[in-house]
Every structure is written in structure tokens, then in C-alpha cells.
Length: 167
Image (cartoon, rainbow, N blue to C red; front, side):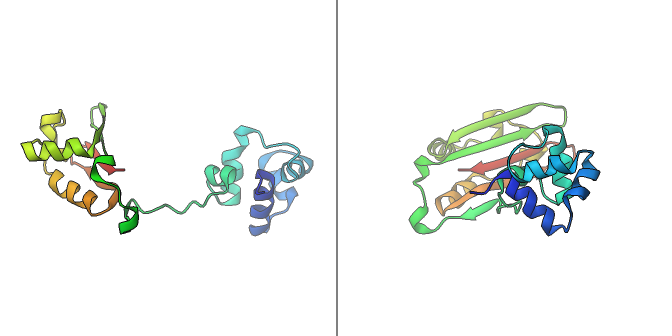
């Protein structure tokens, strides 16, 4: 099993650091670092950001062991993994420049019905430059073809941000 202590030890060695080096830079004793690496104790939570930075990883990677590599924002699912459109969700996040935050989750079946009725962003209460030219017909078509993830990410010149995800 991969533990926090084993990750600290392995990352320290990758950086060619000694326990003394870590201890000195973090202001703790070498014995404390040894206890971390042997899973006898854990580093104080306030030390985690500095420890992660020293080891060249994010705090998330230090704690979970998961890679920092970002997954692609959009994936095209193979035919066998595609969901029926009625089982998918459209998530819309709007952060306006004046501090307003809007979060909408809609079943894709409702989105499809709305498109057929001629609905637009302003029909669901989202106005502004960033949302003006979003084509929901194309988003629906992409979802039907197996596209999932962050399909739209728009920031307007006035600072409004719109993100659209399909899950």
C-alpha cells in the first residue's frame, strides 16, 4: 500500500534530498521527518504546502499519490461507453465580473426540448457578452456524438466567465 510516508520518502530521494535537508528547510527535526517517512506520525497540516513545494508536487499529489497531470477537458467516449442523451447532464457555470455566480444543472433531455422550442441563454436567465454566441445545438450534437467534459469556456472582455460541461 502506498502511504504518505512512502510518498514523502520516494519524492525526497527523487530530489536527492536528505532527511536533514527537509528538516532544516521546514524547521523541524530530522527525527520528525524520519517518523513521517516511517508512518509513525504525519506532518503538521501547516507544513504540507511547503513540504509539497520542496518535493516538487502539489499537496493533492503528496496526500493522494495521484498524478498532477491534468486530464483533458474534453473526452470523446468510445461507442461502447456513450450514454443515452437522456442520462446526461448539462452544467452551466457563470461568474460575472460584478461577483454574481450562477450554477445550472439541466438534464440533456430538457436541453434538447428547449432547443426544439427555440430557447437561448437569455431564456434561462443568463445574459451578457460571454453567453451571447453559445450554440446549444452544437453542444447537444457533440454530446450525442460522445463528447463529455468542459465543452465551452468563454471569458468576455468585461470579465464575465461562462463554462459549460456535459456529464
